Amino acid sequence: MPRRNKTLLELAGTGDDGQTGLLGGGRTPKDDPRIETCGAVDEASSAIGLARALARSAAAAEILEECQGALYRLGAELASVRPGEFGGIGDDDLAGLDRRLAEVEAAITMPSHFILPGASPGSGAIDLARAVVRRAERRLVSLERSSDQEHARARRYLNRLSLLLFAVGRLEEAEAGVTAKAARDRA
Image (cartoon, rainbow, N blue to C red; front, side):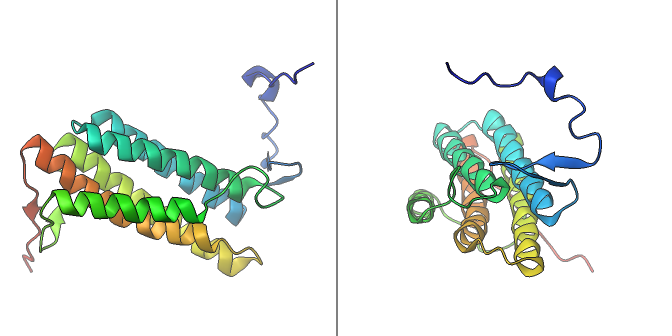
């Protein structure tokens, strides 16, 4: 007989004590660096989802959805008590990012200056997602420094993902017919 997932009502209260469950068993405090990192990855996926919903470019939306799938696997890797059991980032994920970045860069002219995010709703959301991915990357580096856990592929993925998101933001602008304004030092 297939195992039935618990309902939200059945799960209600299981975290009231400040603990949360890990994939594969066990519980840990909600402010544990691992959980902080998982939360930042979840925020990144949600921000990318919003950007995908706002994107006018079908190509940008497709790339963003691929990124969300990889972040889901990355989160499972971080939340698992046994690495690799519930997924993770592989070499194919890294190669896919590099391939997508090359495709996007070949399709558009990248700015030669810092930009002000927000030339369009879609590109602004993509740039916000990029900033959230950078936070997830910082949390992962902190996790690695404070524990014996190493997630080298995940770290590389997050670093490269932020570069891809910058490029996808510019793709979104190009397809929306707008250009990001250059950031100017007014000091």
